[in-house]
Image (cartoon, rainbow, N blue to C red):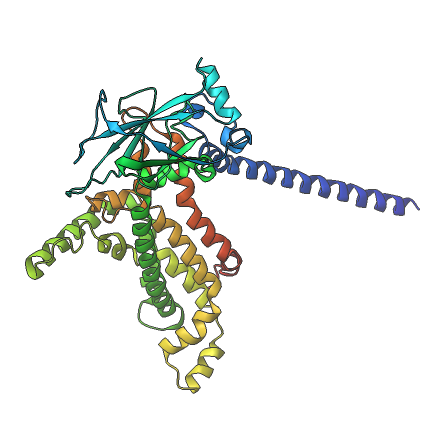
Length: 438
C-alpha cells in the first residue's frame, strides 16, 4: 500500500510539473505573440487616424467609431451661381478666366456640428469653390476645383478635386473634409454649374488609404513591384530547381566542394556585394549602349532589378535537401520509361516538391517585394521604382505624415498576406519536411 501511495504521489507530482511547464510555455508564447503583433496593430490603428489625432497621441481613431457616420443628411444637387474669381491668392494657371461660387452648408452630422461649435462657429457654413481650366485647348472646360471654408487662399490644406471626384474643405480641424459633407461637380458648365452634396462613407472610413494611393502614385509603384517580384521569383525557382537537382541527383567531379563553395557565398553580407553589383550594372549598360545603341538596357530598367537576383544560394540549398530524399527507385523507373534528367525533374520531382517550392516562392517574394536600397541605387526615375520607394514620399520637409505612411504600409503588406494565406499549408509543410538530411 505504501508503494502504491508513493507511486500515486510521484505520478501526481509529475503531472503537476508537466502542467506547470506546459502552462509556462504557453504563457511565454502567448506573451511573445502579443508583443509581436503590437506593431501590426499600431500600423492598422494609425492608418485610420487623422493628422491631428496622431499629433495629439489619441489612442483610438474616431474613424473606427460610429460618431462621424450617424445622422447623415440626404444627398442633394445644388445649382451654384458662378462668377469671375476675385480676391483669391495663389490661384494656379487657368486657360480660361477662373470662376468662383459659394456653397451654403446648412445640414451636417452631429460630429461635424460639435467640431464647428468647438471653434465658436455656427451653421450655415460658407464653402467657396474655385473652378479653373487646366486643359490646353480652345474649349471652356473647367476640370479642377478648390474648396475652402471662409477663405480665398489656395494653401497646403486646401482640398482639390477633379471633375466627378468627391472632396470637401477642412471643417475646422476635421482633416480636410474627410467627414463631409462632400461635393462632386456633376456639371461644370459655367451657365449651369451643378454640385452634388453628399456623404462619401468609403472616403470617410478609408480616407488615408485613398490619399496614400493617389499622392504616392501607388498604382505605378504597385505595378513595378508586381512585375519585378514575379520575374525575380520565376528566375529563382527555375535556376534554383535546376541547380538543386544537379547537386542532389547528378554525379560530377568535385560536386560537394562546389556545393560548399556555393553555400559559402550566402555568408557574404549584402552590403559587401552592393558596389561590385552596381559596377557590373554600369559596365553592362555601357556595353549595350556602345555595341547595340540601347539606352537604359540595364540602368533604370527592370533588368537591373531582377536578373542579378535570379540566383539564390539559400533556395538551392533548401530544394537540394528535399530532392536528395526522393527515392532512387523513382528515377530508375523513369529511366526505364525513357525519361531523362529534365523530364524526371519536371514530371516527377517538381510535383513531389510542391511544399519546398512554395517555401522558395514565399521567401523570395517577401524579399523581392521589400527591396528598397538596391532600387534606389540602380534607378533614377519613378519608371521602375518599387512600392517601398512610394512610402518615402510621405516624409515631408515640414513633418512626416505618419497616418499616410501607415496606410501605405498596410497597402504594401496586403499582397504578401494574401500570398501567405493562399500558400500557408504548403509553406509550413515545406519548412517541416525539408530537413537537413542530404
